[in-house]
Image (spheres, rainbow over the protein chains, first blue to last red):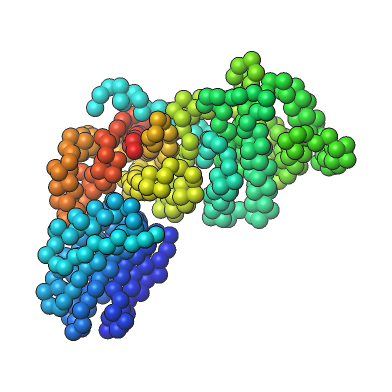
Length: 126
Length: 371
């Protein structure tokens, strides 16, 4: 399946969904005005991906510095979809946060409690 | 909500009205450092770029801003006197008004220098363009450069580049010190010049700004693009420790996006929603305030939402957030949005708010968050 890539801007994240390279990652920051619209193609891709799952394990990485509340809902939706996918293939969610960024760590913790999926929260250096 | 709290933050509307009156866009107050100066200039750069101004006007605005900011930086600490209290801070104001960019700066001066300063300003204002050039040269050759490197060369430069008079005013602080306001305008159409400028509104606003210890005000129409520019200037401000600044940034995004999404226009103005955002500082805490128009018909509902969120805390607040997080319906519910809950959680304090009636259909909503 073809990779899905969005480059980062001042208000939107970098998104790399590349099965061939085993990279699934959302990073940088996310504060679009219209979060629904921004993430719509991500869902489209993930839904299609769900029909063409690889055999390999999947690590899906979130490494965000900041996201707005509109994005918070979109992340919840993505995670719920990943939870479904995890029933069919081995999938782990990795939530990275910068050292001392307590808010980001707590956000990860909140999401992890909502889901029945392998979820690891990792601190990274600046 | 307690009566005194409402009174306490009601000045947001006064400030907004005062700024709207003169179409004031951006005010910075505080110690001027190189970083601050740079960030103010880049904010103006962003605004000028998106306004499609001619490069000639842009250049003039920049060079005058630089002179003005350097003036404040150089003179923000009087040499022989210890100046304390709110007026110690310099102030810089830029506005886009009457077909011109209007720039005002303010700083403390010693009373003993006022006469000399006035003489110089009057001389500059009496000279035509060519004479200004000659005067500039004369001062250079005289070598009568002041200890702070000035001698008014900066003032002459400002007058030359703006093509307008230098307007000024003083406000006596005490026996030793006064506050010096300097204003000039860069007309977009080089034919038109200003004969008179009233600095009283800025002086009055300055009182509120000092009283509330406000360090930055942005007033204008807010859309997502403007928001991003404003955020980038905050990122370059030397505000608090890294974690405080991050928190500040997070809260600011939600407050400003609220205005972008839920604000109303009073008239049929173009662009984003009119709004004001300011930051004040007090005893180790920051107060972030926003203000915008909303439909009068939703005042009651919004009050109830905020009161509800203010009334819960700890685990209940957390549970409420999660519940709202997983509600993917387009928001039409009577329950508070995620943004309000997020603000309450991140600040760890209750949200202060007030409404001021504007007309039959529109009210002004002030919101303040302490971190």
